[in-house]
Image (cartoon, rainbow, N blue to C red; front, top):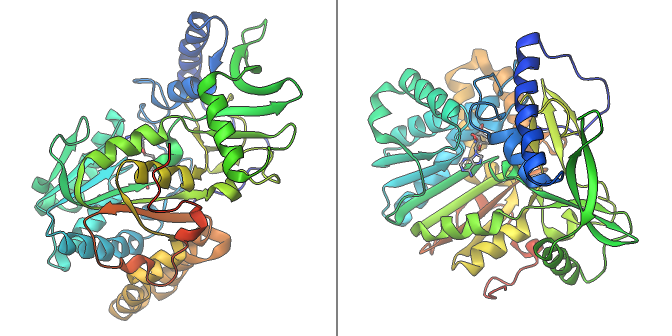
Length: 406
Ligand SMILES: C[S@@+](CC[C@H](N)C(=O)[O-])C[C@H]1O[C@@H](n2cnc3c(N)ncnc32)[C@H](O)[C@@H]1O
């Protein structure tokens, strides 16, 4: 679960972790040198998270869970993946589909619990594909699946790129968009500036400002046009240049079915609200949350909230329909979590308190229930999706579903 940032001192890394971070920082310094002394923040974030062998997601340290840096919903409770499985079963039945594609599968726990539940529902996909950028996490996923669902292992396949043949089925991405590198910008009296990473005289990583290039300038002008007003002075925020192209490529892999994006984020009007003037970036290190992405590179997660309007617009432009947008709590309730909770509590009454606690974490507004949202983009689905049967907030996205946005 991701909490709000605070400013207490961070725990010191042990000597081998510190050495690891120093090696990555050297690589980043070299990249800053090659870039003429200033590296766009999205390039820095890509190196800090994904540099082979050294980046946060590419190296072998413990990231998820109470002993790591943060916890995600599939690790809080199997109720999460089992409820998601009810929605996936409905999608597979609707398109007579046999494929699930999971993007960024973390430890592999969600895949394992989802497949177990689909087996129970007699709706197993022929293939469960995983596209994961981190070699270390692929290994961890393979171990989780071999250990927990050995009978279903043969259905799971790891991909190096998106499938070449469009699929019929479901695409799932839990907390993946927030891990895509973002650019940071700031409105200043000198006009729009991009926050970049540079080196001080003693070679410490530091922020600098540089005039925004045409791509960032156009993106912010578009945000302001859609908001109907200029962003206030000294406003800092993020924009994800990879998001629209990523959604476009994904859309090309769906012949019929639905992609479900679950993440913390807002529709555009809330994302770029004047009061959110410090942006949405958060860093996670040993279950502490702070807002300094330049510290401890390689040892901490760096994320930004998701602009769900941008995500939906990219899908619409690529020919997908918005099939629903709601909070995680409303989605899980609509998809059947209360029924599963009741059945599980009756089956294992000794776990009743624990199960109720897990459900609260997933559903309560002060925990994950409201900050996390679910967006469904798809094609060839005529049924209303169960996860959006309780409340559908698609109208808050501010995009006309039939409009093609340029
Ligand atoms: C915050 S973790 C979430 C993991 C998992 N889905 C969960 O909920 O526990 C982000 C995951 O996305 C992966 N990832 C990041 N960018 C990706 C991309 N472009 N394609 C596929 N996976 C990606 C990371 O390696 C990691 O597995």
